[in-house]
Image (tube, rainbow, N blue to C red; front, side):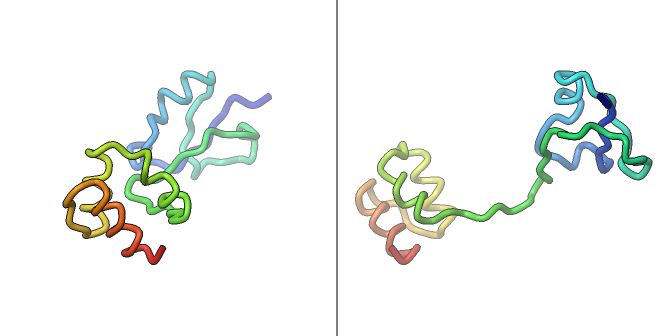
Length: 99
């Protein structure tokens, strides 16, 4: 079984600690430009810093009641909704998302 993990360099472009992941799994990191097709079959998943991910708004709405005040304030700020109080802000978020 191969212990080579081909990764697009530079490794600091990823959210994950590439070196730590490799060490945990006993893998050797090689720049992907040298990929000979002999790398590990199931490499760890990496996400680019700043990459946007799709948001499941239905799930977000269903979880609104579980958010703590700080989380709710951050979400409101991100969506451009004024934080008034928990219930008012939740209603404004639902309205903003069309729910």
